[in-house]
Length: 513
Image (cartoon, rainbow, N blue to C red; front, side, top):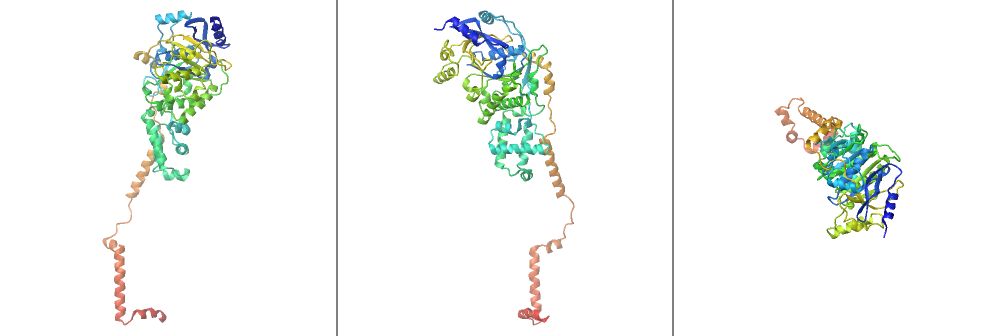
């Protein structure tokens, strides 16, 4: 039976770091909090990604809130995907009630309520800075993956982008893309096939249906101008703390394709625009994706592969990504293997399937002599979790049952008046919330088709030769001409017969000359 002294020594050795670290809470041994065994998270490893998992009501969102506060204190900007709409309280001071006081006394820590610098963002422009991107910024490869197209259909999408580049047709929103798609399948088909080769009408029809499906999930709100500059996510507040950007996506939680499209574009844009940073002492930006299963719920294999690739590579840019979900199995194994930090809140075993998932989850954590992991996962209290992470050398730390700190900001939502105040003081609202509708592919092609139709009408009404007379109409008729030729031949034969010249004589008449 391991002793308490051995436990404390193991945790201290496993969670002591040479670089800056933030305290998540205190270790628990045999049901008792051990204040001297603090559990720390090194900033240097925060770009190695992570997972926060657990059943509903076990404290996942508050853990996400807690880590965001610590990062902001260390001048690290944060982006939070607020699916349920309960993270806006970061902008207000917390309240020290009896439960919070008791928790901090058990850990021998002091609780100080603090409000944090917050920027509210939105994909629809409602109660936040509007995030948008143009179709051109997505590019043909990413757009094809989002639409779930095969290689042939993806080739047509690439052709559309090439045609628009060659002809100065900006692709800003989905109506631009649809207009070009319709044009190359109808009026412009001959022009396109002459320059780029044959195009299947069946394929263009399939692509159009896929785009309409994306529109039905609200994609028109996201595609367009002014496109969001990802550098605005990495701002530092005037007091030196990192800005906490809260993307409020509660209004699209029933539109997983829209959400996954946005996330994929955001990750791709961050990867493309941020330089290689090497081994930083702390990350440049940390993303927390609450209800992460929405990204993968309707994602194709291609989309999952693209996300996996970006997650593998983006940490070299100094960016960390943390998934928050109810069940670790919601995240594909290929992505799960890239996550260095794992914070496991309680899981509930109501069915045989639940018990099987719990057993699989326990097997994903390091072995320990201090706990029976499979049993402990179902016994964790609210605000408690099993934690393991990668240390500075990339070695997993010991699995530890942890009593987590409470957030110092409000553990509730802001009122409408408080949200209005934040938006009024935001410099980004004025920058991004104005609708911009520049001349793009839709307007240019529409004008081109209208001009062509106008020329066609003019050609039909253009003055020509005077209308033929009735006599000319009759004599030019082919039937009348044939009748006239027959009558003429009959008259000639009659006249020659009267002169005594037979048909045979007429044939011999050639010798007369």
